[in-house]
Image 1 (cartoon, one colour):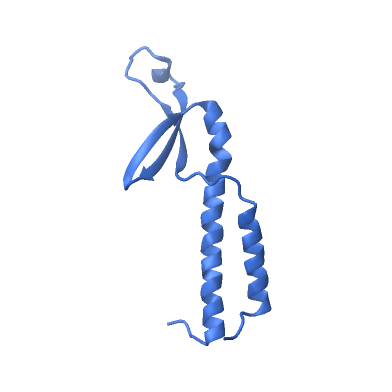
Image 2 (image 1 turned 60 degrees about the vertical axis):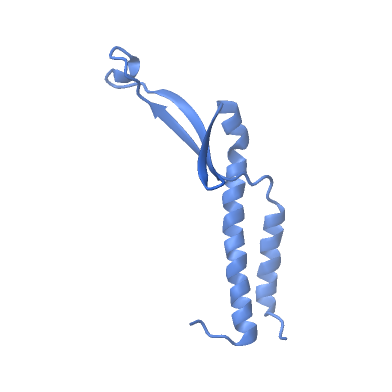
Length: 113
């Protein structure tokens, strides 16, 4: 079987090196919310409003169910880069999969159909 071109192999090595640099890829998303309460005389009802918050929540799927957990500001600060690592890992994995598809098509002579 023919080997993938050197340019594809080089890019594969670059992608795997980037993946190796990723720390903790924490799944889910971090949301920051500011809310308004129902108290008529509250500062959140004044003009201009001063909303309550920020409130940080981590949302993810567990066994096909959405699970949300409130985080403190310190936790949000600490885990924020982990959420970014998860996004980066998904992006790099998709690039690696596309590269593998291109390598298979190039080495086997398959045209895209």
